[in-house]
Length: 140
Image (cartoon, rainbow, N blue to C red; front, side, top):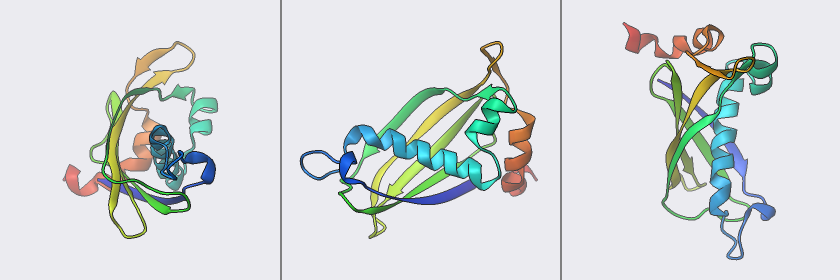
């Protein structure tokens, strides 16, 4: 299993009239979590697209709202890969407030697409090489 945490402060423009983080912005926070997770192992979406020609479109997004996040809250976005990807990759996300209370949780499933053909492909080797070490215990 591979888990990564990143912090993000709720900005004023991301809130609704009540001062709560607008519900539609949680999807962007999920994206921040998975982008920073990949960056932590030396990969960027830009590199995946430009150097390797691999795109990762979202197939599904599921989330549940537990309690509101507020303007200026410092949130922890905990992103977890529970299994090695094959044809798809699923990022499980939990967002916590500064009191370590769960604010939101869910998952986002993406597939791998070869940019030049627009066809689905298996998880690329360059990605698997970076993340497989996190699953070494599970593979034994």
